[in-house]
Image (cartoon, rainbow, N blue to C red; front, side, top):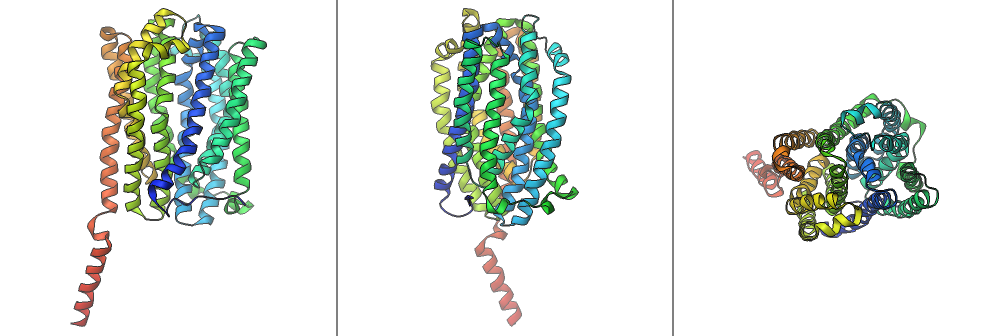
Length: 462
């Protein structure tokens, strides 16, 4: 029998840190092998190949981010059922999540493969890199089922308080991915298709390991009854999942608009933007992980109606995000050229990246705190607010890039990121404060309840 992990009992800081660190190493390993992909492609195949792979980043985030948002949304309901100890509801939610994810995987795979070339043309992809972008994209999107399977299994495990199994899965897949990358490029001379195939195979391994763990959890022994058509459960899952999926996709649309303007500047700019995006994704991981932790912790305690623990958990997660900002923001600010040279070869691209990184290093606190507050709102079961914040991000990112790229050049891309983070942060902080205050208002306190009972007793006695 495999264990689950109840986040509604015990010392808050200890629970959060024990949940955080395995997931942090998981996310860092994912980013490391993503950066390894980029570095191996850049050093092995050149900056044009790197630009081709990087050119796919925003589009990949659009599609895969949509599926990840759905999985995260589904896991909120699963975690709330687990926190409430309603295991029948939990099994129904898991079974319905599997069915919905399979249907979505088929639809997303077909749509992304069919329309890939047209979208790349719309993004002003240079003729020099478009064929490599297509080769890479067809493999990545063709293997979406493996990616979605891993994301769903990992989200279910985290909803049950298990952040260690996804870590084990990612350790295995990272090693496999890096080895296969080197073999495909340096030994087999496969071009950009090699790293893409390595990524998909690694995701299959991750999904398999997580699935094995799920099968060992007693409360998740699913029956045919759990898989019956359940329209009400589908709607509840989609009510949580779709807004979070659209939040990711809306954010990705803003990134794609930025990518459009960057591509119009030339291949050197595309390569620099690709490298900078990889570093931002890497350096935001501690805070991103604190956000995932906040989501699972909030969901379970919200289901158990232990609202004061949510506030305590917020404080711990914000401290993690702040420490991350101080350490990693400083690296981006003080060592931009060193970071750029690790991925890029051409002096022009290196100089451009060195403009971008310090700006985002200073403003990294915006996205770090955003992850924590947004995940708290999601964990309480209010996904439409984060979706609205995604719209705010998109609008602000597009507005800055459209208005200032002609004046500021490549630096406008960094300012677009910073402004988008701050706008979304303000909305989520406000929403979190209001939602939690409603649950912690004085009339719900133990002292107030006791006072009401005393008054009732006096009145009845009279």
